[in-house]
Length: 204
Figure 1 (cartoon, rainbow, N blue to C red):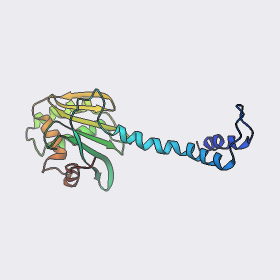
Figure 2 (cartoon, rainbow, N blue to C red):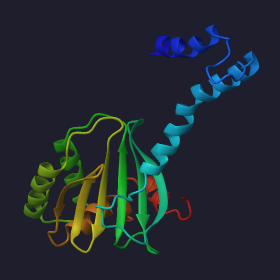
Figure 3 (tube, one colour):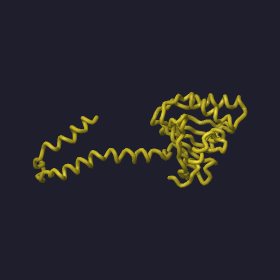
Figure 4 (cartoon, one colour):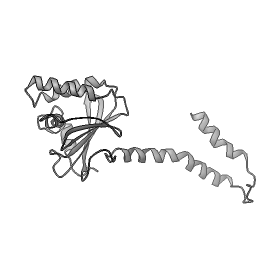
């Protein structure tokens, strides 16, 4: 990649001749400024595009009137697993709300479902219900790799899950959405520091 980039930058330097329309050639100083600007353009564009795509604004995702609350990191044994960002109304612990997880590691979808069931056990004692929810999540959650994200939306129809602009599916079983989003937002969460970061207002 770098060799290709160098060849494209070096090519204009070889021709210091008048252009076809009769305008004088660029002097070396102006050429250097122009080339530096062109080379820097991808570095300016990529972060802006990534920031814009981080908000759940797709027309297929039923979110209106929500504001960005906080964001934070989830680590396990010191390793960064994902970054989480919360959107909600005036009360970030009540629906409607949306939680986005940006993954930093390879994780199997079945492992995501199993970990969710384990955490939901803090709030739900019915093992048969947890098993049924676990099976539903296994059918929905895909394998993820660094750079992938999942978005969970808690709305009137229960919990909906998206990856990019694709609806993975919904789980409208009574109590599921409450228990699922409690993983991050309930005071009994296993990640209190992340919860505090998510509930922090005015970060976006």
